Image (tube, rainbow, N blue to C red; front, side):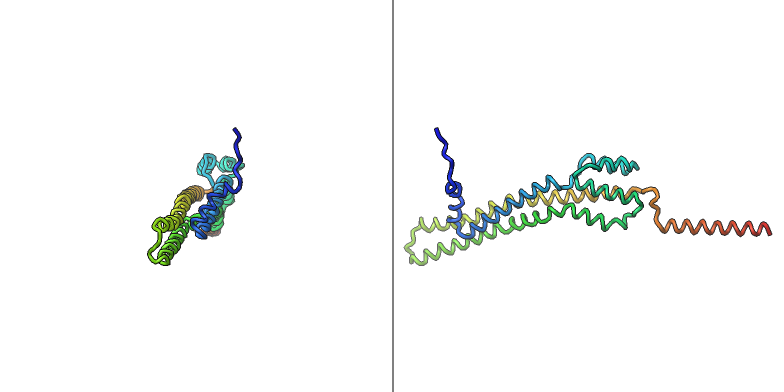
Length: 247
């Protein structure tokens, strides 16, 4: 028993039937479905390669930092391809050098936003496809219904009911196709948005824990200035006392 390999025409037959059924509107729906599928695959790839992930080593590193074990915290974060580890290591390094939260806030916010930047454009594309596909399908249905009723009007009441129902069926097929495209992409977009919000919350929580820890030698400049002034005043008062005693 031999198995015949399907030809290109046989593989493209379903697509050809859809195009014949829905016309140009069906072609637009198929095009945006291909775009959405490519965007979803691209998002899957970058989520595996570039997505910030909260793993055990990052939790251990932040715990060690909060306990004052700076070197152990840096070792826990080093050697990871996780971009979140790089952000936290950067903040720890700058904090250990004496920089305050106010001086680091803008730079840290920019770097944290850059972690989620690769996912914003694919999310927006999927949301637009999920919103437009039903509308485009509805447009195809309206156009098909107009064509069917126009044919009935031209027949002057002698139109075949089977022919009319077939035209309406073909017109409704675009709405069904639009909904079939929109539903999975809407679900994927909602899942992506949930993941992004949860990761943003994890990043904020970790940064707050790092900034809350008081770093030795990170005394505010105003406090240092006030301490120096007080010491100078005490020295001056002691010197005056010695002079009066000698007199």
